[in-house]
Length: 382
Image (cartoon, rainbow, N blue to C red; front, side, top):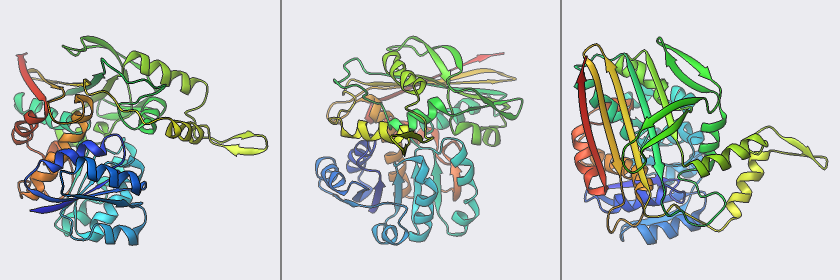
């Protein structure tokens, strides 16, 4: 039985992670941590199944982190990717295994530089273990396996829909600031074995996501798979294609076009103001609204190799009693399940290892079925 700490527990995804951990027998204690300690305590009481406590923590505070993480088997970092390196340092100091939801390419590259220190400490850091990166990385490993281990091109495609969105001007499927980064930062793709940067929101074509999304337009966005897939699989062409709900995407486009997503300060009445900081503060002041329980997450991997094409698809819907929809479950359940696997001693890898090389496909998806995850696969010979 083990103690798991969840950093960022008060965010959009954190409560789902806590709720999933509460149902895992290998987890005896959950510590919910967030800069908003009051909200973290509320999450612990509401979602922790009687085995969670909550408190305030800024993971960048080394001394406070050392105290908060003492005795933990796993640190699940669901806070902003901007604090990933600080969270990893805290995990090393506490002697704790580590899981996060991804580093948005640039931070992922920096995180890989901590590999030797984690190996020397006998610890595992699983990079990118949400929905995507996360499930899709493990799906990609399965697709490559189906092709006999040889692959030239990998397409990662993600979509989600909420048929009953709650009222509110901007109800986001995950952290708003991460979405703003994905849609405004230069976008890496791998072409011919080299990373190339595209303009933000470069059209990526239509992807057939199947029921309930169907064919949908996608855009290329910055993602961490481009930082790990070439080394993990030998793939010379990799891209991440995102399809957000059209109404939500239109709102984010407008915010970006009028400059509210910018982090560059502008002068207002003689004082510098960062538009994005203002936008995020205004969003924070809105009544709290979360995606409905009918949300669905859909993900697709296409792998192309000399022997043919492999497709692995995944649909996540809400299940009775879980307390949140498939969109949240799609991201929240995988890291919680993997944390439980670490607590049971089921993962042998050590060091800083992307999820596609540290988490086995079969055991992961077998457990995720209980959380509304359906996966299907197919191969077409060349």
